[in-house]
Length: 360
Image 1 (cartoon, helix red, strand yellow):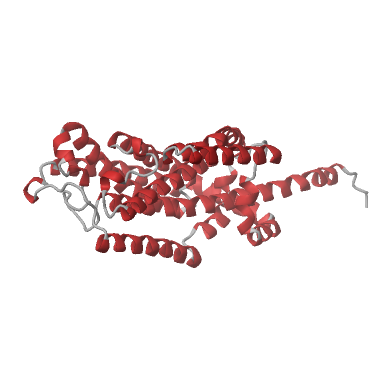
Image 2 (image 1 turned 30 degrees about the horizontal axis):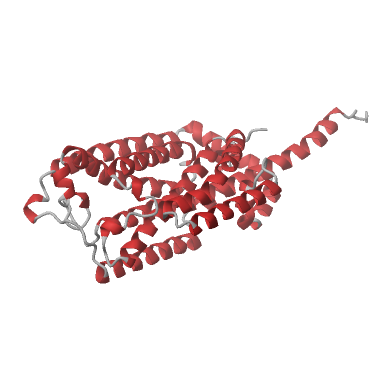
């Protein structure tokens, strides 16, 4: 039985767990502190070697930056307003009230699920269709391909591809299963997984900057062939729009998702400007325009050079996204437990209702 409504309907428990709790907020600040430490070290000790525009030329496309900011912020504020009004409507409130009654009936199940919170992702995300032996064989095949690629001295992108490609059919099969069972929650998981990989790519790039003493020409991440503005703009636009769609489904109870969406909106402004400059004036872009709006030497500027700035952007988008997905996974787990409990009680209830009543 599909449980598409489960991920949103358990409003009371979701609200309690979706709030910014002390532990998760501390973990969030810790992640920001680690990222901030890395960036501070880079800015102070390893300046990035890249073209920088003269001061007088940095504002040539200020109008593009302003236009992009107005466009993205207008879309963002309009969408946020629509969603907030939707979540505050009586219909939504009534739905939440109904969920309250259902959740209270299954209070024991909810308490038990709370105790198992750390195991929720394992319960929800475990493979359902792919047998364990297939997973083991796939792992051995991937390991063999990685070893072979390394021995043959293939480039880093080929080695990573050798590790990932064998898993794609398994993820596809399980992804279809999760989507049929959980609906948009499965898309949520896919976006989160891909964004974790995206943050990994930016982390590798920063590591390369450190190892090459700031040489940007030799620091393009694992998949350097994809390090150009069309790819960046397309990817981040899809993520921004995708988070907006997820907000419409899960935003009523998931505060971390709102934070991720806001950060993604500012990131989108940056890439909108960069994509325009990259396409409209390649000479300006190559001469230092790739710094963007907030990068060192950009329209507004900051101490962060291009690779450091975009590492920071992605930390601000992806860390809250991971917390948001964790919270939603816990809600799905609790919904499954409550649904199973109600299903087990239904036959007994039906039998009691059908039994004859003695006359008194």
